Amino acid sequence: MTRREFRNVLLGTAGLAVLSGCKSRIAASASDAAMGDPYQCGKCGHLIRSTEDMTEKRCPRCYAKAMKRISEEEMATALHAD
Image 1 (cartoon, rainbow, N blue to C red):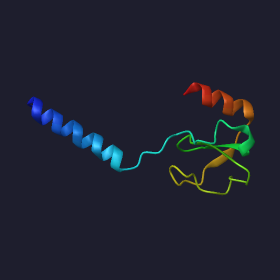
Image 2: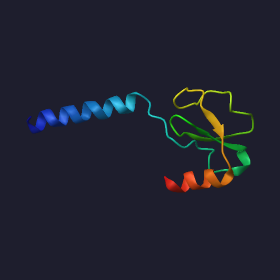
Image 3: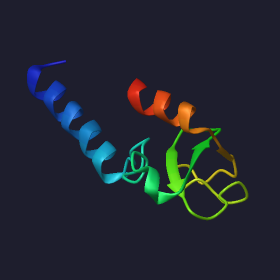
Image 4: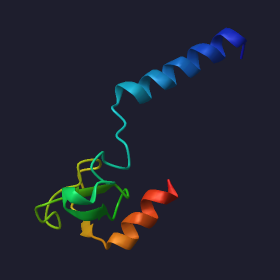
């Protein structure tokens, strides 16, 4: 593989990742305790806060019905781990 081929493959892969809409694992509201109760997806680990019950709702990142309520301590640990 030449340098030019490698660059084209790398740019193609990076473009695919950008165009696919990779969502962050941590929602923008996750660090603000005033936004509601903390929830975490059991499939992809997405962290979010919501004032409504999210246990029966789908994850906004992977669309799985795996949201579970977590404690403030678990949320703080997960936020500082990333």
